[in-house]
Image (cartoon, rainbow, N blue to C red; front, side, top):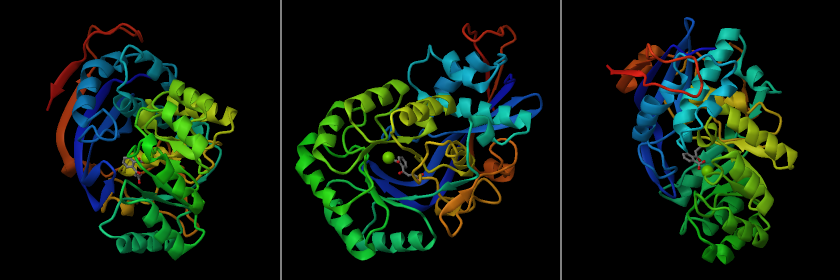
Length: 388
Ligand code: OSB
Ligand code: MG
């Protein structure tokens, strides 16, 4: 396969409801949509970097820069046997996984579409429906939270995740358990605590949570290993797992019993598959995380979630919780049994509304192979970059 042209668009979409985590509140989703073209076919990848470096160190601006100046010249006009060859071809670029993933995932979509196969098949998926859970942000009041949980349970979702932070944790979980009883429930702290909070976090053990996600620092493994020994509740790592090596280290250290996979965080689909397989080999279940993606990134997440070790419901939910309208039509919907059907059309398999993309576009750039670039995966000459 060969990518002849890349188009980057910075899009801004209003969220149906604000989303608050321990690191802040968002009313909009702003992200780069990557369109990769080759042989008259186009594939799409959604870059999950945000406006600010609060979930990860990357932002839309850093991703735009790194894709334009460093990733595009290494992929444009290059013949790849398979999209799994793309991540290794970007080895010289350290970090910037979200930027890499935006392009790499577009390439997988392009590849699957060129073959006329759904992405799930090309990725090695084994199911045609995925189990869906929801992530509910911090609310103004506990009553608001209980109301939201009630609606999501009525919609059929198979597990509820609530965001916690110091001051919005044990009492809130207590209120949720008191109201809803033994529902499948978990919490996500987005790195809001330290080991000094271990006794406090241990109070969560009495609520039989499925897991506590990323309680400690975003890069930490060692302290999570200490904490896991003090908690009955399984720890799930999100932010800390940015590479296959970090996953191996975390498993070896006993820093977690579950891992959340987000392709953007690890550099794309091929690295996600490697983390998935590593976890399977060690009896660590995985689930698919979410980054408030539009229907385009959401569809990609659904396909990856069909791999065999995605045995826990993920944060991949219906479009209407996030965007109205979504960038795809029809939107992604959850069935009353809390599952989502895997699209069967080629690639990500959803219908993209170009008119809605156009309306949401803030900035656009077209990247073309430099006439002097060679079909080599390692040497690079600059891409022609034209901002339009
Ligand atoms: O930590 O999983 C997270 C959203 C943005 C950044 C980080 C996270 C989240 C979510 C929402 O929890 C998942 C979703 O519904 O897309
Ligand atoms: Mg998380």
